[in-house]
Image (cartoon, rainbow, N blue to C red; front, side):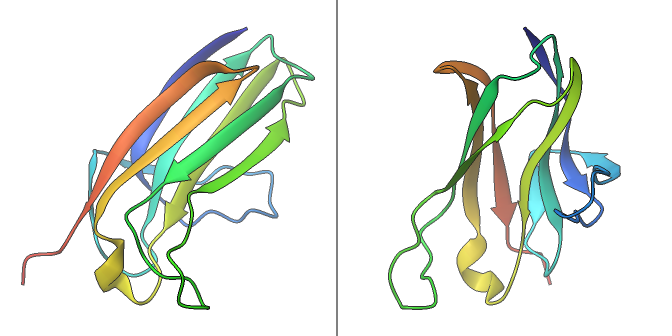
Length: 126
């Protein structure tokens, strides 16, 4: 399997129900803390059809709806073609004040690290 990060930074809004990846807007590791800004990376994976990707988004400590510190977001998905593009990312939602800090995005396959990128969400200058 071959894997490379094709782009990282800021993207258009991602629709998880669509097969279309978000459109790349800006290459950066510093993301302004603005409501609904989409950030992450796109991986291009070749010769991996049928294999399982495991991903984790480790984020600054913020509370979930029940008032507890939210754990890292994680999940898995299967590669459905031998020329596969995968978006891993998130967006900023209210309250935005607790979303600043480092967000580390990690993708693995069979325990092997494929990609990892840390993006820093920063408070906007006023």
